[in-house]
Length: 336
Image 1 (cartoon, rainbow, N blue to C red):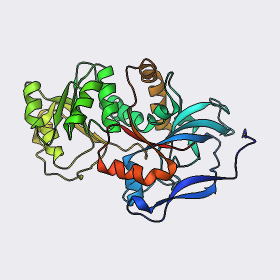
Image 2: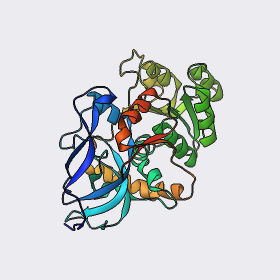
Image 3: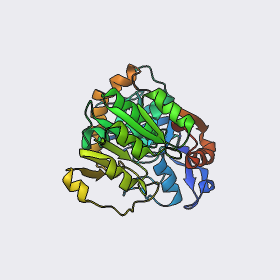
Image 4: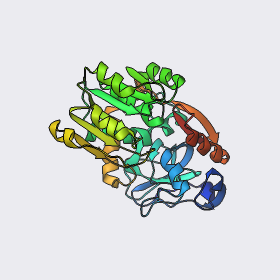
């Protein structure tokens, strides 16, 4: 293992006293993680805040076996230690990474195959906001649901990190993009970033309006993080051979549904979580992103949207903002 001579023996990180509200979090001090043979140690510059972190803190989303209990699923920073089997990365490389946990810390270990170069022209801050959303959107919308140019795509929660990523990627790959949001400011922002049709779910009958726009042909691919009362509406809005993908259930996972149209229209329902996927699956997603999406980021056809940056000791405020849903885009922690 290559080593840096200047690594400290301890680091600051965010710990939780127990499961609960945001104020269970506090700064703690502990040893640096030791990277395994296929991992690198990253000196963290920035970390992204994501809804799974909030769920983990609240006690409703346990980390998978073997993952660190420290929150944080994405970081940017500098490689300061390299595992014995790692060939593709070297000390001093600047990367962003999908992590198995541990991002809310000054140092974080991540599989080398889940690290990506900082896209040309992007800052460390912007790059730290890429992995969780881009891995999630790519694998669900393009890999699993096979969204193609010319198809109609709907994402709910368009102003979230996932939503803005999905809008931009779907647009970049030639789809007609529909989205729902909770207020007019969010609607205007989603329009500006590339959505063709935006509905305020508090004031618009989005299901009827979409049916009119598509001449009742429906939507080819739906990405849903809401669930609950949206499930039946989404299924009724789905086109012939449409694909419906769940990635979260902010409104709950239960609904009463008539599945007969599913058979008549040869539709597909799928869903996934990113964190439970195998290391090799995540490595394959990283490879696809580097080849197919990183050039669009470098060319500014797709841009990460940062809403607000908090210092590590302001993580409580960052989580409260995430829970308020008042943000448009990513909430980030400045660590380094």
